[in-house]
Length: 249
Image 1 (cartoon, helix red, strand yellow):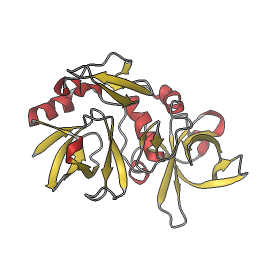
Image 2: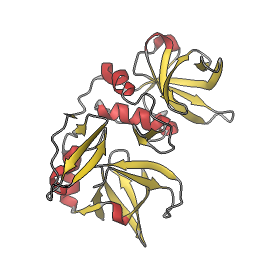
Image 3: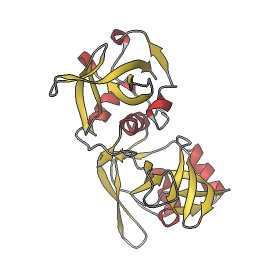
Image 4: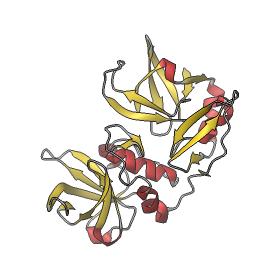
């Protein structure tokens, strides 16, 4: 088994080993993973944090020994706390990194960081404030950063930065936590899931106070939520059909 660390700011993870293949998620700087298979210039990986699998370009990661991977796995994760920051390498070269980059990997990658960091201390009350850091970020399928993010990427990153683990896709996240019977039982930070006409869960957002929700629809935005779903006040209609509200914490 081989192991690796993402040594670049943002790396696409694709569904197939091809540059034109769909991006299903991203690796942020410092994320570490197992290499399951190599095929030409591509590697199929399993990300340590959420066990998500996909293909990355072999030129876009740094190989490490098994001991380094497991040392990182046992450490408390530390994340960059600003929308964008930079690292300095041994030659004084700079690498920009986005919010949520994993700083534990600085030592094996021989980088230094002088910016603000957070340790993912478990704090449910801070979930909404963290989500607001991503407000107006454009929608991007498979994205995980303030420069492009999808609905489940938003919820996963917000929870991760506050010390909680969510799976990657909305349908996977919906298998976690405890279902609530009524929207009135929800608290800020709970997750609301929405389905399509076939009953498949395709969307997720974070409950706020006073029947508001922060989610991704074209961009990270705040809308109203009621028993039917998300109501867009600009369009004056419901855009997403509510399936279930889950208390993850």
